[in-house]
Each structure stands twice: as structure tokens, then as C-alpha cells.
View 1: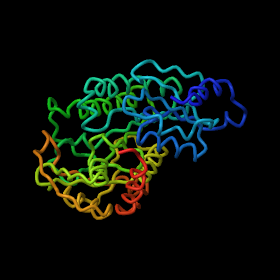
View 2: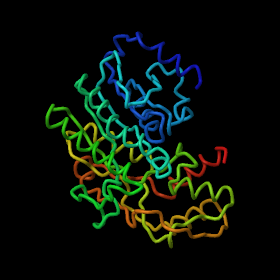
View 3: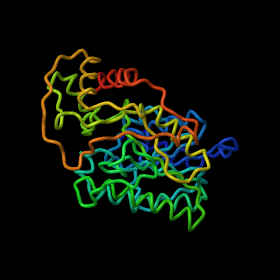
View 4: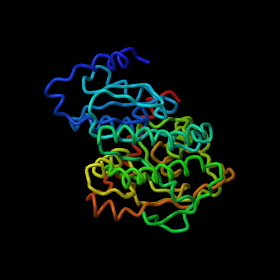
Length: 333
């Protein structure tokens, strides 16, 4: 851990000027993760003072190292399932903390359940103490292996509660229920976003998701691994589009879940072929057995986001992938 990041924690504790008091203060749990760190950057650009909390189980210091010395940023290394004490007044709590890939929640199933339950409880408590507005990052995994396509927010899902992915699915379903309970019982201002497949710089190369997996295989000139025939479909949203949608949701007055993602759908095999085209690699496609409960289709219905938030994605898949490949090309493979 670079010393500057820890120094920032103690250095800014009592440094509130009048101008700082007027700033919005945001807490981002999971703030050193892929999406959490992009949100931190976005909020700082919006003029917020930002406190990022992360235990670095899947987050990385590299994602926030560029913010060392920024007087409007503070990093606290802490597990959010533990009580969070912050002396300053907080306006917004953005609960991003959770392992979020199949490899991660296979390795950390109990931690995944704890951050979705205890972590959400603690983050809601922090929001309650400050009467801050709270946003939960939920997931398209709520819908399981869906029997309805595309998936709209009123679909209750087709989820295996005891399968290998259940620690993530059920943690998020519980987190949604707890968020709504705080809204109904305590009148807390809450927001719930259901995030669909998202990609971009700062993804971990080995996190098991299809974008870093295919890009790393292409850059290393290894065969591209398809599960099954590669006919299962996904839709991919670039990280900057997603963060913009999440910010608009937080600033809206809507308390029920909203899908944020890109509805442009393609098969995993088509996606692999696109990665090969963009990297210029000529590689074999190899097939392996489908993982248990792997969704066959995944595509968001974003009618609600369009109508409520006037939001829709605008980064073309090819453009977003070029930026992502360029970023991965600069990382150790």
C-alpha cells in the first residue's frame, strides 16, 4: 500500500474548510474495485468529497493510486461487514462492495454472503445515521437463468437457491429486500440498480469474466475458451455509460430497482470472433462444458431507465473494446 494513501486518511480528517463543508460527501464501499473506482473518479469530477472503503479482497490499490494526494479523496482499508465509524457528515452512500465474478464468489462464498447481508446492513446503518441517500448495486444475477427475455424489473427470476452461484444471487436478493425494508420502515431514501454485464479498463485479468478472459487469451496468443457451443448470449455495457446511469438513478426520486446495461445482444461465439478481429489474433476456439446454472440468455430491458432517467448507453461495443484492449495491453499478462 503506497504510504500516501494512508497519509491521506489522517491528513484530511480535521481539514474541513468552509468550502469543503458545502461539498457533497459520498462514501463508496468497494471503492477500489473495478466499478467502484470508476465511480470515485466520476464523483470527484462532479465536485464531491469521496471516502472509499475497501478491504482489497478483490479491489486493488492500483485502481485508486492516481488519487494519492487529492485533498477531496480519502481511502480507508476496512471490511464493510464491520461497523463503519466516520466523524463527518455524509450525503450519499454508494454500496458497491462485493465480489462480482464467478471465480471470486466460488473462492469467497461466505464473504460474498456476508458483504451482501451484514455489509449491506452496516452500509444502510451508516446512511441512517447521516440521513444520507443510499444506493445498492444489485445485479442481473437476480434473474438467474431467465425464462423471460429480455429481463424487465418486474420479472422475479429463475434462481437456484442452493447452486454454486447462489451465494451471489441470494446475497443480492437479500440486499434488495433489506434496502426496501429500510426504505419502508425508516423512510430512508434508497435506490437499487441492477447492473448487467459491464466491461472496461481496471477489470482484473483473472477475474473469470468473459471480457478479460478473451482479451488476455488473445493477447497471449492462447486458444479462446468457449463454454458449450458459445450460443449463450450476453450484452455488454461500457463502464462510463454504466456509471452515468447509476449517478442519474441516485439523483432521481425512484426507490425501486432499475436495470442499467446495454440491450445490444450477441452470442459468446460472436463476441470471441470480435475480440480476435480487434486484436488481430488468429487463434483456435476450444470448447469446454457449460458451468452449472450458467445463464443461456442475458439482456436488459432498459425501458425504465430510458423513461425515468433519460439514460441509455452510447459507447459503441467496438469503441469500448478498443479502449479496454489498449488498457490490458499495458498490463502484465
